[in-house]
Length: 75
Image (cartoon, rainbow, N blue to C red; front, side, top):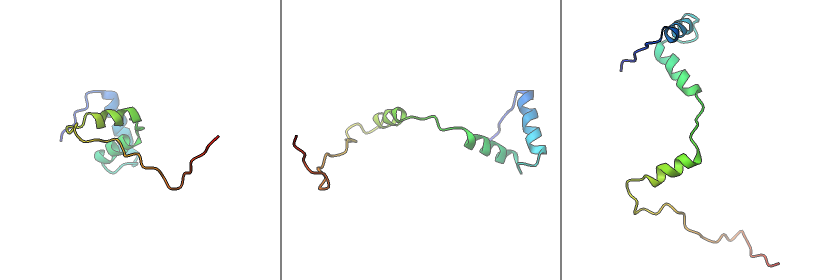
């Protein structure tokens, strides 16, 4: 894979990080940058992905089974 950097500022930042000795390779620098990004996916994203399943006939709703650990309460 070839990654092209078109911004001189980004190229300079990469060169500075490499000169600092913090990274052994450009690949390591990119890997660390990607890992440091927060995961911004939400539960809604997960639901949308599940609903976009190519097998809509599969029921993803869990069965409702009464738990023996929970007792009925009457008020």
